[in-house]
Length: 194
Image 1 (tube, rainbow, N blue to C red):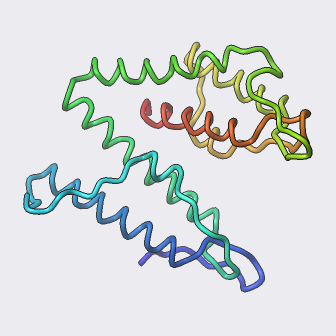
Image 2 (cartoon, rainbow, N blue to C red; image 1 turned 90 degrees about the vertical axis):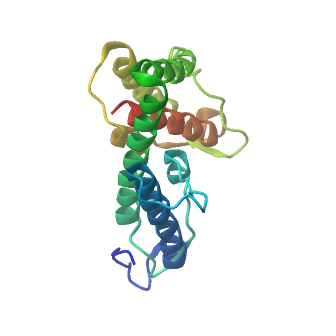
């Protein structure tokens, strides 16, 4: 059982049943992978595996009186970081530090093309009256990410996770889904590095 606070009956929060189910699966996967690593797990059943990516894309319905969104999101961030650390350890065990470095370099290089595009041209524009993200806000974050990847400037995955952009309608904004997918990949690389 988790210990998240509930919102009041007039405020929406994450569906408690969905959150409990997700964290129960995560706990089981995490504990069984830990048992396998220490040799205390029987080999008769396959290990459930949960990846950092699965945690990053987890989504829950909003319901009145649900679990506090910020508390659940913080717990998800910690879980993602822990799973990313385990994934790093597995990669190092399988192929050594060089394999880890090569994989992280490959992932970071895949991001560079979009980061190096000119301001206002990094992502597709929203269509019609579709809400989009303010290009200036997104481009400012992309410039900071260039500093992080190219010059080693300080920046945390949480800063990217918590980035908030003003809304612009139609062609005045970047397509939200494309920006979000790109930032998910950025976070994936950042948590693998830390």
